[in-house]
Structures are given as structure tokens and as C-alpha cells.
Amino acid sequence: MASAPLLPASLERFLELTSDREQTIAGNMANVDTPGYQTRDINFKQTLMNASFGGGEAELTPVVSRVQGLLERPDGNNVDLDRESMLLAQSQLQYQLGAQLVKSNFHQLLSAINGGS
Image (cartoon, rainbow, N blue to C red; front, side, top):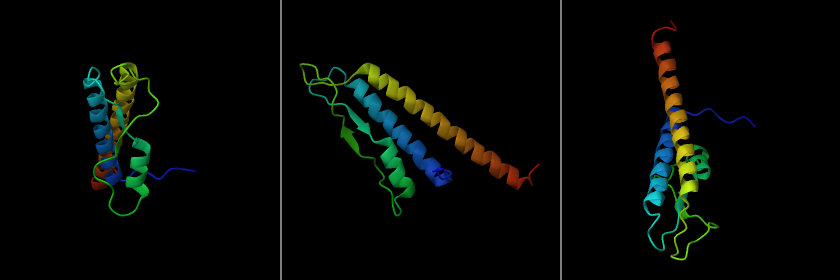
């Protein structure tokens, strides 16, 4: 099944969600030594799908939930810096992709304004 092209509003939401996820991951990394801190994450795919195809008003703040199944240290903290670093790199690549898509949309618009030349 082919996915629907991202519309400008969807691109905006994609960039917002990516930024929110980066902030969540950075928060996890900042709390690596906080006793009892539990890793949080945004279900990026599900939240983007709800925003794109949910119809009606999308949730402004994505749901941030605790990540289950990670190894917990004796102090109750389950932040894994290797995992968080990988997720941060992935999120940064997603943001770069979104920025490139926005840039492409602007070039198409400019081309249409200039008569395709």
C-alpha cells in the first residue's frame, strides 16, 4: 500500500513530533544518574498516524510514556545511554528528512510561481 504524500500541515506536524521526541530523548540522557528515573519515549509512528489520518483536531502534545522492558539498575533507573544515543541519531535524521521535504515543497511552489522556469 503506497503511503499518502505529506502535505505541508503534515510536514509541520512531522517536524514538531521529531523535535518533541528529541527533547524527550535528551531528557532521558540528562537523567541517566537520577535514582528511580524511568526512560520515556513518544510513540512517534502512532502519534504521526493519528495526526495525519485521525480526522479532526490532532493531539497537540504527544503522549509520553515509560518504556517497559529495559534493564533497571539497583537505584531504579533504566536509562541506557547507548539506546538513547541511537534513538537521538535516528530522530535527527528524521528531522533532516522533514526539513528536506519542506525545502522541496518551497522549490516546487517557487517553480509554479515563476511559470516552471
